[in-house]
Length: 413
Image (cartoon, rainbow, N blue to C red; front, top):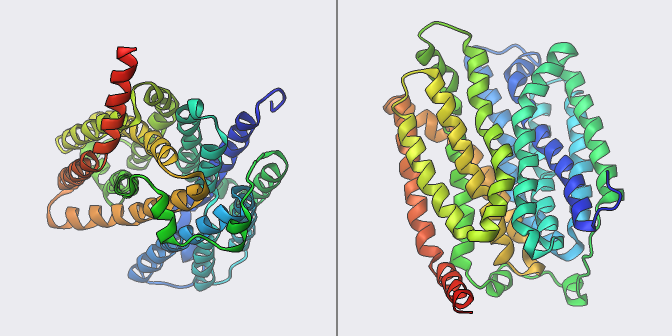
């Protein structure tokens, strides 16, 4: 499969599988998290809810904090080293989760899992730095489907393995697969990273990094876009089963239909992201993001007026389409407007904002649905996306001018 492939194509294949498994490792515990916590002690319903919430959020909180630190090290030592650190660390931590004897050990390991984050962000950074610029959109559109597919199938696989074997065996199996990712990354990922003596001796400060960036406001705007995309995707999480039950009116399997609703955005993104990545290479990534914002606002508003489960499924599929227009384009713009020496740092910041979106989304859904109703969650998400769109249009003005000047010159020629 890897024979006769150019190095960047070989990297893309191996790292797609690696990001797929990393995404799966982060999400597979979700179907049985509360149940596993319940086996580790005798808890009341409120205690179980509280401890499950802490266990869930612990990884994302730490990921948001430590990702820039790993990105800084990656820019000095190379992205491949960070891939090996993250995959080996995750394999050991996931395996250890199957050995815990109380909930506090599990929470500690979930925190440690956040420390060993960074596989996905460094895979993105390595693909960005090693892929020819003419193939950047296609490559970034492809690599993003790896973590998306992993996050999508993780709960399904985790629930299936836990049902066939046990909660603990699920962790051991996942750890074994992550060890495989470690060895594949070690032997088959190629990197031409050669830091200068100055880089090896002295790490660039954040001020120096941002001083090299041509459009810093654009980069910060892209970080916020990543956060809002994740928040929008996850705002429905706390109310998903309840909203599905309401739409079904007591008919049909709530659990099964809720699983479909949860899965369809990822399916749409997997199908469409590579195609939109290639389209962005041709028409301009800023145009793709603009289209994605407008489309997402329309879809979220429409979702607030759904009257049956099939409308909800169709609209959640369209949410995945809007993700597919924006996520590869954000990654591509980060690549184009970031100096190569700071690629890992910038992609790690982006991962931090992604983790914050994972935390923020469910909180928005819980608060809004408490004070208003389920439809209010989608309206508030549309408002949030609209505010983000306004910010992006303002920050991307220099980029649009560059593109328009280039297109005018090409047309004149």
